[in-house]
Amino acid sequence: MQINDHTPTPDDISWVSDEVAAIHERNRQRGHADWCGHDFDFTCPSSVTYPFQWFWDSCFHAIALSHVDLQKAEAELKSLLKNQHSDGFVSHVTFWQRDAYEEMVSTYAIAFRSRYLSDEMQPPLLAEAVSAVAKRGRGVEFINEVLPAVKRFYEWLHTVRNPYGDGLVRVVQPDETGIDHSPVWDEIMNIQDEEHESWDRGWHSICDPYDKFDRDPKKMIELNHFVVADVMTNTIYIENLHVLADLCQQVGDQAGHDEYQARAVKARKSLDELCWNEEDGLYYGVNGKENKQLRVNTFMCLMPLLLPDLEKRKADLLIARILNPDEYWAKYPIPSTAMNHPTYRPDTVGGNLVWRGPSWINSNWYIARGLKRHGRNDLARHITNQSIAMVRKSGFREYYNPQTAHGRGAPDFSWSTILIDLIHEVK
Ligand code: GLC
Image 1 (cartoon, helix red, strand yellow):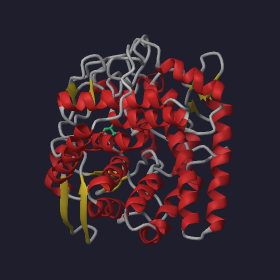
Image 2 (cartoon, helix red, strand yellow):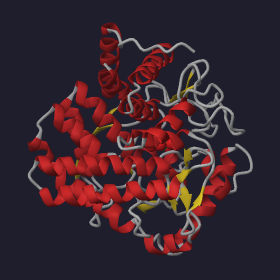
Image 3 (cartoon, helix red, strand yellow):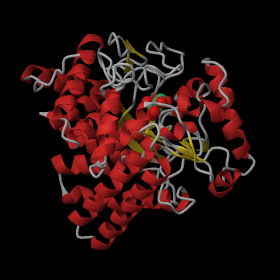
Image 4 (cartoon, helix red, strand yellow):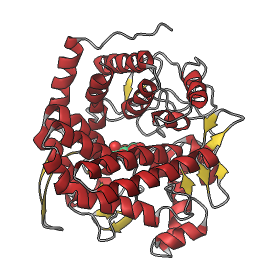
């Protein structure tokens, strides 16, 4: 397929900017929550299916908003941090207006810390979000306002979710990676078919046993049935430790800077030692204290391309996979599961399991930036241009068919607006 590596046109840029601003206005949730006594002001992922505040969605939203509305961008992150727990943990869903949506909540498979706050993490791109908002906005002033809470969150990850001391963060259930239904989890979750009921049963088989320990993290990890160092989550973690180190430096916190850099170096080394598979030429997540690799070919295996210090040999191997028309080089890349994997389903429709084939704009954002970092801005631009084409054809949807660009899942899906940042990156 021809590489479409022209610079995004001024017309594309202004059209996308207008759409981004409009979606964040339509999906904005503002109000007061009596249950915690705080006001809230954030963009929900979708007013149709996800009216609450999700952790990593909000980080993507803030980055997109930093290009079009700094006041909203700051409010997004401040709302996210308002209900941070005393141990530093930030829930992956804050159910600000839960009482108005009781029926909808009953359909979610989610673990709770309290009635309004979940007991799950999501990929930790908070530092990146703060950095983007500070860079285009109030700089050090904004960093100083949020940094103590941001540091507490990364301390929680380090102390609670790094149980083996290798520096890698472990997730204890699939949805903590944000890639809920990926076929990577099928074996551990004993998924027999592609029905939601099967996934829900698998989710309960992982999560119900945690309840008898009141979800005490130590005991959940000791159970050793789902303790995954996921490649994508850890690539994002490593990237964010570097960004956090930089934020510390900007406000003169040299000790913080040095500590986070050291953590990033350690996690980076472990990622290579545990997750790289020389035979397959891919990175895989590992499960349990035995560090068993989960050998399923999905876009997550390609994520370490984001790391600037990835050695050239490995970067080249991953890039070759992206360019392989049997795996990831679809007309509208990048499919979430390799096209030659038996679980690949390009046309996920409402109610099906997600992350099994369709292309998503947030993973494109990460992988295209990784390609640029490894000297392939031509491919980064191609992915950006094809993403623009998907959005022009089908609107800002949750995900897209990689062959046809048909939009699926929620309409007006807010994190797809991260496209605006990608456009600026590859210009
Ligand atoms: C789905 C996605 C998850 C996302 C959430 C809200 O559950 O898999 O990553 O955070 O929707 O958009």
